[in-house]
Image 1 (spheres, one colour):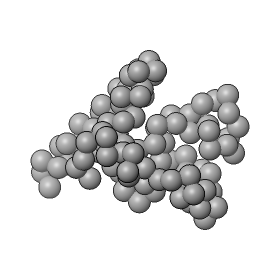
Image 2 (cartoon, rainbow, N blue to C red):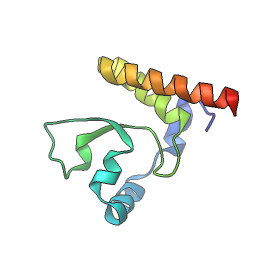
Image 3 (cartoon, rainbow, N blue to C red):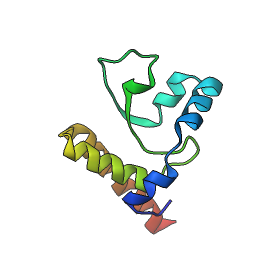
Image 4 (cartoon, rainbow, N blue to C red):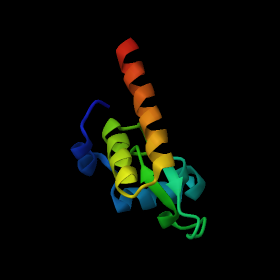
Length: 97
């Protein structure tokens, strides 16, 4: 989706939606919608998975932008670089499609 970072507050899944998704698909599938993990949290905990970028159906540009911003603020440079790469790939797809 083409949107700006501030749109993520409207597009990100609610806690209820996250819980329903985990109930239907499992925590491993939930994890795939996140760019980072907190290894201090248990594998079965939602709090382990950081920097979400989609709504369990589609990737959101605003989710990437929000993740990039938060990663930079918290000095997670590996996440910030990965998000910048994904954002570049998304932009390239949008130019060709």
